[in-house]
Amino acid sequence: MHIYPDASAVVRALSPDEPVILNRPHAARRAARFFVEKFPGKVLYAVKANPAPDLIEVLWDAGVTHYDVASITEVRLVRGILPHAVLCFMHPVKTPAAIREAYFDHGVRTFSLDTVEELEKIVAACTDPATGEAPRDLRLCVRLRVSSEYSELSLASKFGCDLIEAPKLLQEARQHCDWLGVCFHVGSQAMTPFAYVQALDRTRAAIAEASVVIDMIDVGGGFPSAYPGLEPPPMEDYFAIIAKHFEALPIAYNAELWCEPGRALSAEYSSMIVQVNKRRGEELYINDGAYGALYDAAHVEWRFPVRALEDDLIEEDADFAFYGPTCDDADYMKGPFKLPADIQAGDYIEVGMLGAYGAAMKTGFNGYGNALVVTVEDEPMMSLFNGTRVREATDNVVSLR
Ligand SMILES: *Cc1c(COP(=O)(O)O)cnc(C)c1O
Image (cartoon, rainbow, N blue to C red; front, side, top):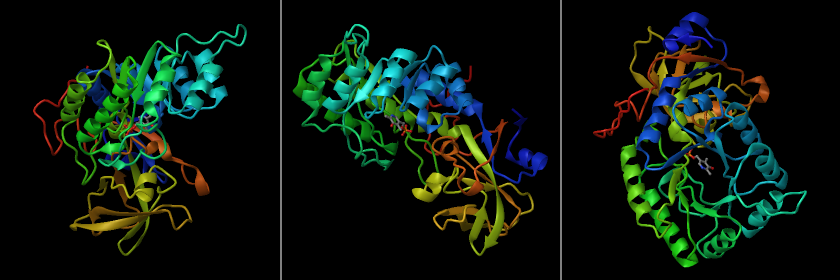
């Protein structure tokens, strides 16, 4: 893969007609080292945020040994890249065939569930077809429903059992495994550590009511990255509060603490070069959008950072909205995106912080979706891990190995 110093060098070299994804392996490595060194437990990467094989290798090399996979395709993908990684199938609704293949062909032992039906499905799918013997080595995680009120993107309504059902489900799951965990997800981009306090309080109530031994607490994803208008408190504050409330739980003395960040490990990995194909007033028609890496910009009005890659733009910034390349009116990104007021058709823009739920969202709808992928060496447009963030902590910089 070609390596360039930065986005401007890519534009000078290629004058690209289609979007270009710019990957920053050094930024992903730094985020991974930060979590591996500072999170007071085990760090799983939630693969759905960005399943790029190059990224998965970078994370592995940086010390991330466990992966949260949520489909059989993700299981096969990660197993193909990392034969020795620990894969945890953390989607609470799976098919029997997916469970069977994961268990028998790919060595998956950890599964999440939020109903008795799913528990029975997992046990049946992992039963030895020759002997009829039930599996003895399952590691089960009961997914609890918790509030998403402190997060930018809710994950509260689809999965998770409530506090009424949880004790019974924990007791039943305990009968099928020697290792039982509780997991939850506070929603993505949790803007305050308090989100985890509330979820751990709920966990405490479920465990106390069930009175079963709990071997693992998985606080899920939700760890933030930085975006315009969404600069979170220091990550250390999240880690410290989680550690404190974990230690106060009524669980086995040697119980493990896990987290499953997707966004926080991958957001800084990628940005993208787009070109302005047309300007209409304060609207720029660019060559990526709602069906591409800018899915979130269109569908949840996420404001990714932008910068113009032209030296000859002299006017002050103005607010722009974007249209994507497809013929669909919904291919619209409200922004506002701040760019020089004299930007025009033909100019290039870099859109930052697209490593999580960005580069991974590209489709080929309407014939758009091709992108060149290159490596760049400059810093991401925003970072929580290089000492440049707005809300600074004393101790947030980790060294690269
Ligand atoms: C999506 C997801 C994650 C990652 O969430 P982020 O907010 O990106 O950190 C972790 N765990 C589960 C079960 C998920 O579905």
